[in-house]
Figure 1 (cartoon, rainbow, N blue to C red):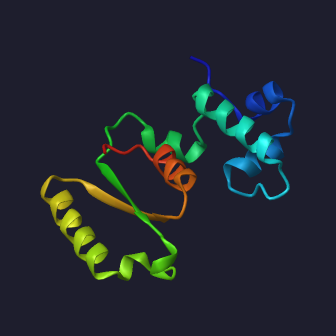
Figure 2: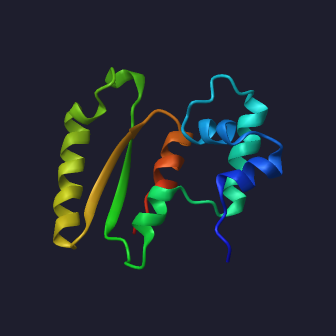
Length: 125
């Protein structure tokens, strides 16, 4: 299978590589919502992997598990300081270590942020 490049996606959509790259990196303030959706759908359907994901995937199975914590406005930008969240994350961390896993934690306000986090890292769960 041939590696999908950013250029391939851009060409297929009739866009510049810079536009596609900006959308994937969240720098899409000058891109229409319709273009943003087209890019994300094309990337999802293409099998494209950013270079950092390719390096992490390698040939070894992942020992990473991910947790996305909702950065709801009620947390005032500090969701990991919430006592419930902190206790839950601490519990998960200890469980991950017992099973030989690494826990990656990400705060996110949108489903798109959570999906991007999950798609970049090769997580076991």
